[in-house]
Length: 136
Image (cartoon, rainbow, N blue to C red; front, side, top):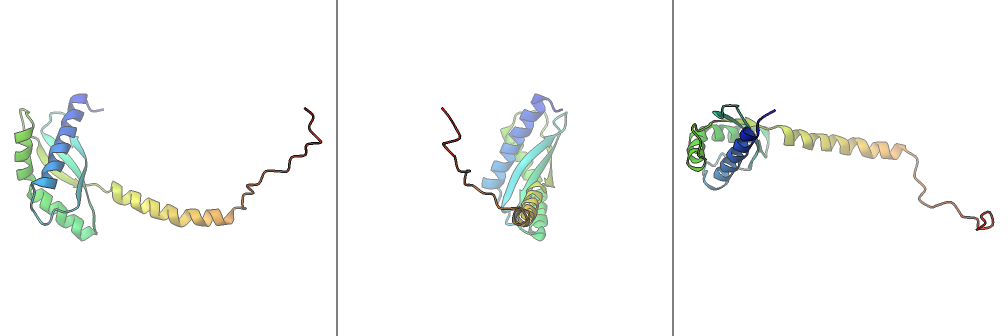
């Protein structure tokens, strides 16, 4: 379990890096990038930045290469905005979580309508109430 200090540092790194990618990075390879989360080492010297890149696999690899190329620039932005003894070394990782959740949703969409067709239809009308049987 990470300490609160490490979690706060990871969140600060995520904010700074995502803002710098959005506003200050002009590399045409880096488009449609979302920083999903950051893993920090216990000594705060390493930061694994997990990113989601929309597009096909070739676009994702190209975007990841662009981010790795811009890592020094992003580290300098991080150094300017976060006051720590050491500037974390940034390493980018492709986050497959979004892609996997889309694939799971697609599979469920294929499977669930078939399951619903096999079941008997549900009768929504309540049974008739016979007032003679019930005494108040």
